[in-house]
Structures are given as C-alpha cells and as structure tokens.
Image (tube, rainbow, N blue to C red; front, side, top):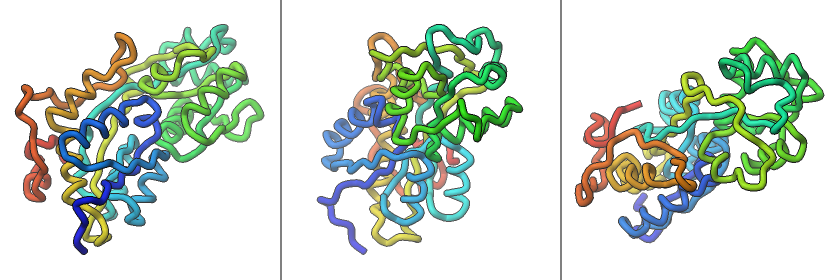
Length: 277
C-alpha cells in the first residue's frame, strides 16, 4: 500500500514525554527539518504498544524495556532504539510523615511508606511509570495493592501529581515531568536513587510486514532524527530553568552533520542509529 507524502506520521507515546513539553519541541523541529507533521497520541506505555500491535500508529515511544522487548520479539515492532534517559523520583508531602527522605534506597523508602500506611497515589494505568512502580513495590517486599491508603488515579501523570499534592500523598514520577509540573504542587523530591531508578526511553517502528498501512520510511526517519545530531542536541538543551529534564544517549554531532532517513540495512546493523534493542 502506497503511503501519501502528505499524511501525518502517527506516533503513540508515553504521556511523560508530552507532559514535560519535550515532545512538542521535538515535533516542531522535526516538521521544520522533514516537512512532516507528527500526529501524537499521548497514552501510557502499555496502551501505546497495544496501538502498535493493532497497526494504528507508525511508531511508538515508550519506557519499559521488558514490554518493548516482548513487542519486538513478537514481531510487532522493529529497530528499537533507546535515545534518552532521566530518572524516576519518589515525591511526597513536605512533612514526609513516613520518613521516606531518610531511607538509603527507594526500596527502603517504599517499605517505610508501607509500614506507616501513608497515602500513596498510583497511576494504575499500565503506563511505564505504573509498571516501574509495581516492580519497585515487589522488590521492596511490600505489597500495598488493595490497602485503603493506596489508590490509583488514572488519567496521566499531571492528574496523579495533582491528586498527591491535594491529599498529602506520595507518588512515583519521572524527573522531567515533575520539574515541568512542580510549580504550585505541595510536593518535594524525597528519594532520588539513580542506581535503581534509571528511566530509559525507546522509539520503535511498527513492523510494516504486519500492517501494510504503516509508514515505515517515515517511522525510520523519526528514529534517525531522535538518535541523530538534531534530536539529541534538542534533548540535551531542553530545560526547565537551569535543570535538564532528559539526557541524550548519544553525543550530538557538530551542526550540519545531520543524518538523513535510515535505510533498512543500516538500521538492522545499528549504523549511526546506535544500539539495536
């Protein structure tokens, strides 16, 4: 099936990239460079990958490696690339009734919240943040699910932060979204544990062999952009005040050395796109 040059690139993405403001800046830059509009559907990681499985989008941006690898290994996606990182952080009320700030690791902080039965707000939506939160609870040997002080507020990270602020509760959030949304919130960072809270973002092209309507060429152009000089430079320079919200994985090349769309051969071997996942 021929893909019209005028059609928008369909992208399903984790909401944190959108809510931080970064995705809007990337899409504007991509339009200026490629002349193609990116049609964004900001949803959780789980929902983005389900949209990819159904062929409803051309590419996905997600942040849960286990789900991403299952997606690729099942033949739904191709050419997975990690392209940026930040960290998750545990945030909560200024008074910190559970004493989470005194904990040496995020696991100890969650255990303290569990012991104190302190209010905790979860995404509860199969997003990358929600999936990571569940893994962290399991690793802390504290299972809060079903407890009256633990509840889900679906609808995105912004709504989750607002609920936590209003209720004096704890929650897990990526640093980029928290810094972008922190103004007006009665929350502070209580546990930053980079060793255990690294948060990597990947972009994956939907497999055109599964869905003839997929614009694979444009999906690969987006992957090249995000992992190339222009995209990596923008990610590096995107800040809230003096604070970077995300960190590029690849050193931006000098201006003018922007990579063009990747070929299928180049992408399968890594090439300038970085590591194959």
